Amino acid sequence: MRGLHLHDGVLSFRTDLPRPEAQPGWSRIRVTRAGVCATDLALCRGYMGFEGTPGHEFVGVALDGPHRGRRVVGEINAACGRCASCAAGLDRHCPHRSVLGILGHGGAFAEEVSLPDRNLLVVPDAISDDAATFAEPLAAALQIGEQVQLGSRRRAVVAGDGRLGLLCAHALHHAGCAVTVAGRHPERARCLPDAVVHRTGLLEADGTDPTPQFDLAVEATGRGATLGRLLPWMEPRATIVLKTTTEAPLTVDLSLAVINELSIVGSRCGRFGPALDLLATGRVPVERWVEARYPLDAAAQALTRAAQPGTLKVLVDVS
Ligand SMILES: [Zn+2]
Ligand SMILES: [Zn+2]
Image 1 (cartoon, helix red, strand yellow):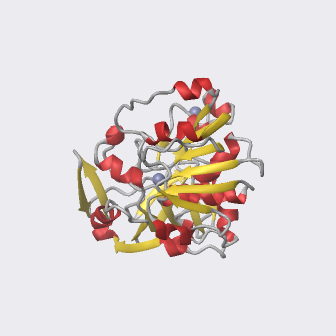
Image 2 (cartoon, rainbow, N blue to C red; image 1 turned 60 degrees about the vertical axis):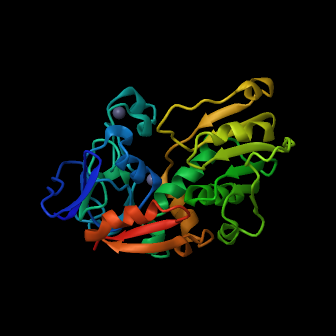
């Protein structure tokens, strides 16, 4: 089949990739559309040592299995279903898992993918194909609410006004938090609900001493060093949620985390059901965030485009 292939850090478009094989309990999906994510760009730089077809944000049509013929999205962690982690409901932490387009599992910049049947969710008609490609990152944003007690009490700051930062801001706003986004792109204020404050320069080092004023922070800049900038803004017993994986080790003075008894929470993937529910309301205007789209045979250019600073969202039209 046709698709992108990453080998030794070089992306190439190929027409001879093997189609996923049928296997019990798994479905094959014909990919309709796929989104480019910062993780895809990191994989191309060698993150995870991934070889194969990247791409994990997709919508497609199930070719077999219980949802055959229906439009589906798929949770990306394919767990073994047999180990202690899986038995405890921590299938996204199964040590034997593969991860679509990230770890030992061919991804969505190709004509077909396969996933366990239980990973698939039928996409409601109210959600367009473009919007459905946001189910995965929106689920990751909503995962914050699974890990941290949210409520109107929370004065939250989201560091980063890239795509994940915007999604996190929407998720926190939806959960009742008072949200400030600390970003670099003034025009991104338009991507946020009116009640969300957008500020540029908040986390830049300008010599002024921050006044602690947030009891929740989400680090979604893609730059791990932002953690150190967030610390002085946090009130005692506040929580900082880390959404950024760093490709290189990080040096940060954590004294304030000790002095103020801060909680630091790592946060990764979430369930797709709540993400589809929120997308179906139309309250997260993700379709307007799409800045470019490329056909599958130009998917490598889609990744190049997505790597340009300030690019919000790039899609690949697969079929
Ligand atoms: Zn992603
Ligand atoms: Zn398992």
